[in-house]
Image (tube, rainbow, N blue to C red; front, side):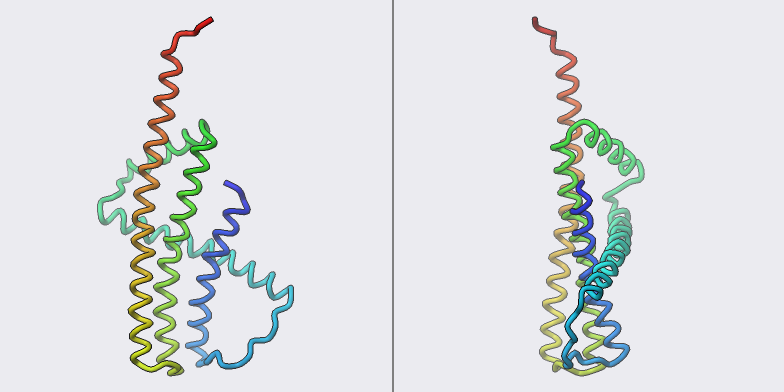
Length: 192
């Protein structure tokens, strides 16, 4: 997978993390976001970008561990399945660049959805805490925000859950295809 693609994924995840961290900090400080934010200079953008990247790495790992725990509890994954999946993935990565790219693409979407499920949930929680502290919106509007946030979080979590299953199906299908191709190639007599 291209390093740039991974970097961008982690920045996308880190920017979402930055949103809920800002809300948490604003809730602690009682900040209302009604003052003008000063124009950012180049160094500020570099620092924020670097911080978003590190936060992206951290939240990606955290979301992965949380989803794996849920998958394990629901019986979707067993330790021997994980080991077999890792062997199959290595086989595909070594033997087919096009199939390896497809696996990386699927994993990319899964990583983003997993992490954004956590980002949306924490953004909603910290938004509510912030609003209780500074009382910017009324209870009715806050209720609407809760509903929209919960629906969005559920949709992204469902997408992550589906993508997780799709990744496994794609891995198994690609592995089976490559094995059949390899076995078919060895069974064919050489023609001159």
